[in-house]
Amino acid sequence: MPFPRDVLKDPKLAAFVAAALLATLLGFVVIPDEAGLRLVIYGGYWFLLVTAGLLAWSLWRSLRPGGGWWPATARERWVWAGVAAGALLLLVHERYGFKVLMDEAMLLGTSMTMHLEKKALVPMRAHDIVGHFQLLDGQLDKRPLFFPFLVSLLHDATGYRPENPWVLNTLLAFVFMGLVYVLGRRLTGRDLGGLAAVVLLAGLPLLAQNATGAGFELLNLTMLAATLWLGIRWLERRDADTLSAFCYAAALLAQVRYESVIFLLPVGLLVLWGWWLERRVVLSWPVVFVPLLLVPYPLQHRVFTVRDSAWELASQPGYTRVFSPEYIPANFGHALGFLFDPTGDVSNSLVLSILGALALPFLVLWVVKVMRRARAESPAAVALAVFAVGFALWLGLMLCYFWGRFDDPVIRRLSLPLHLLMALAVPVVIAQFDRAGRSWRWVLGLLLVALVARSVPVMARHAYTMAYNPGIEVDWRREFIAAHPERDYLVIDQDTVIWITHGVSSTPVLQARHRAEVIEFNLRNRSFSDILVYQRCEVDPATGAVVVTRDDELGPAYTLELVDEKRFAPLRLSRISRVTAVRPLAAPAPPPAPAPLEKLSKEEREKVRRAYFETFVKNLP
Image (cartoon, rainbow, N blue to C red; front, side, top):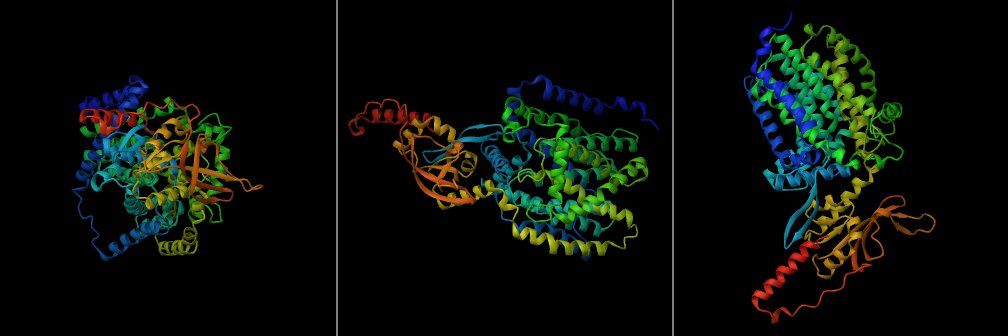
């Protein structure tokens, strides 16, 4: 039966179409690259504040009529206690820390600037100026802004602390596991079905790593699960408030990770299906403005246009294209190698991989069946079936990515949405084979045995954690900072953001190498209590000589004194050294000696101090 003809006369629909066209023009055509980046820098925080506020308002309006969210029976309380235990398991076997160096440091840096200045910048230069730590320079990061925005809210509420990303991810671990349980229960119609999905994910070391890290992967999973759950509610209720919550959750999901924008497609399909079932267009004025609130996403993506290095092709020699179908066979092999590695030395879950691989083919058949008879299926089934299309597109994109090797220690985290899909697929398929539900207790019992016998020992050994040296090096830097709480020193390091976000003045190695006279000025004038340099080194196995890596070499102008060193891998160690002298090769002639301050008048002394301070600021490294 077709839509009523007067649908096209709906003013809200006309306004939505106009907003979508305007957003497309602004995001992709009208605004130049540099202006677009500036708009994200100065407006990104405020766009997200409005979007998150409207999501909270819509959720409150949508959930308020139902009420009764607190578990009413003893059985429900025990079930939710089990869900909380699954989340807690992810947190107790891992140490909190920076697990993926560049991503997590950049996100923390952006949250710091959002907190202090309400700008979306990563601080690249920051110094202690007469007792005040000030951000002097920064750049817009390529990573979407929703995660650092939430961390900045924690900074606003509790004060700036570099540990606040861990606080956020700890909270998200419980929220995510709760959503997984709700989805599993809705898809199977049974509490034990939801608990089965929770147990499968509780035994995933990769998820535990990210729950105790400072990255945005867990937020991505949480928003993905929340959007799917709200999609189910939308098909059930088909009212304006639920639609608003669904659309705003999708808008924020698109601004967690780059590729999560793919899931706007299944969201749009579910909105259209809900309209078809309702025989009318259901819209609210908040939804009309969703396309305009998404404009910062394509504008921020211009970073990849103005900065070719943002794609990091140089980090993987031999690749000339970012995405290509040619990469699928190799990436598929790497994915299988990661998922089914039996050694326990990688952060996979062999139990989830085996059961998920068995369930996915049946899930494909189930999706086809649900699509063919969507009117007769439950809203939960239709929502997952449509979202499965989004998961398939996402997986196809990952397999076409030049760095899409799931067995790479840096890239493993990109496989988390696949693990979520498998964790939901297993109980869905079991429910199809056992419609009477007699096997659920046995299934849950076996999963718990596998969790204790396989997953917990793997997580306890932490072999996969030791495979990523940069994360361990960050921990060593943080130990050094904790041991030197005065933080009035300068550190020369390739990774300045780590020091800056912990309140320590820092400058890059390349800058120090090319501007040795600036470092000499600060050393001579004791601008800092100490000037230190962090360097990575390699040991020559033939001679035992320690050689500083090329990127960390300061050059012949510097004289260094070893402070501390630590080995992170065979034949690889890192050093913290003190700069004791700097002799620039082309040092400028020294200025004439000024008259002694005691011989000057008060006005002249103030003029000398002001001139020195201006010179000091200009010569900050």
